[in-house]
Image 1: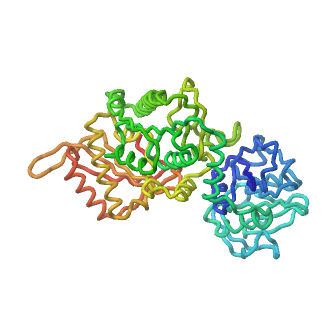
Image 2: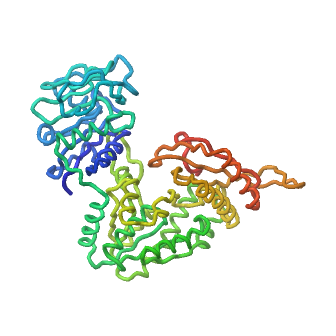
Image 3: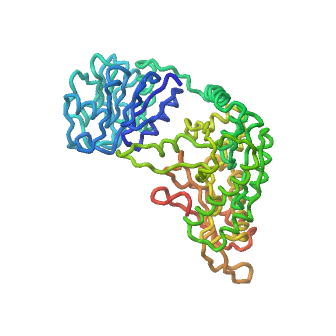
Length: 510
């Protein structure tokens, strides 16, 4: 790689957003914990310091080693980063007398500064800090102020070191993209060459070089990530890629056959394995959500391992791991942000499989994965598919799982998803599905009293699933879908719509 931006993470909730905004400028960026600065910085054309939930005045304040960076590589310090530059270089950081959170407007901008090129006074910025810089560090030049924050932006004389106490990466900062472009392109001289086409070309070449004539096994899920990974690998190694698509009996209605047909149309070497009975047998009588997840994961590994052994001399396991998974697994150690999870795309493979791992998408965010797929002319129906949980309908059936309940929920889900597509709503929703609740309710059908199941419909809008808001679907649509479900799906007499957001709720119910 070349022409890279290094982002040092101090645990801010916005760190991933900084990387995304930089990449939207077609400049590659990567996130590394503040205490793991690479020894060799020759690949990096600029460095960005992120914000942090901690104070630079605290004993546990994150302290990076900037000896090879400050004054040597163009540096942009954001929020905590700006306060760090001030506090440890002769300035003064103290608790703010006024609340510095939310929208503010630049009331002063120093003239003829490339950093604020075509950004005018009055431009809206987003503040999020409890400390403030009372005195600038040695050699600093004031660049911008707001009504409440005098030292909103500054630079260090004789260096390409810039600092701001607001967040250019959030959409509330209206000229945030322009500010990042001014710093990265005009000041740091970065080239805007990080594009989907360039990624495809580079990645395929690297895969060919790494994999050679080795055989590669990939567990397909039907989702966007594994599908794009499969196409990249297919272009690199062709028939040496062996794809396995497992039907765990908890997929959507007809999904096993529909997805297999789509993959065959892509020219992939795919084997479909229907292990529905094996999964449902292992889940029989189990109602605890965590146990159900672990059971589904365990049986998947068993089935996948059985099939993988049928591929002689396989050397590699391919996974559709994407960049947020990598970031979460190697986040700041012993610092302000804790590791969220250890990510395993296929549920955590046992050591005895003895396969080396290849992850062609590990540098990409979700939206970038879709753009890469589009650049390879992948079927839009695959690229636009909603995320679907690994355990499938197993965590959308609350309580124990039976074949009858699966069939019932598949029918309900089919009516809902087809309705979203028919009404032109599917692409406006990030994720949608139905939950089968473990309660019966009284109803009346014709002249008969019924005592049947209740289902909950869920549709959310999000960018990455970390937060999500419920979608305000049209009343007429909900009315039609409710009627259709109750009329067509035997055993259901009540439909409700989930209007909770994440947080405090989660997207799935289990």
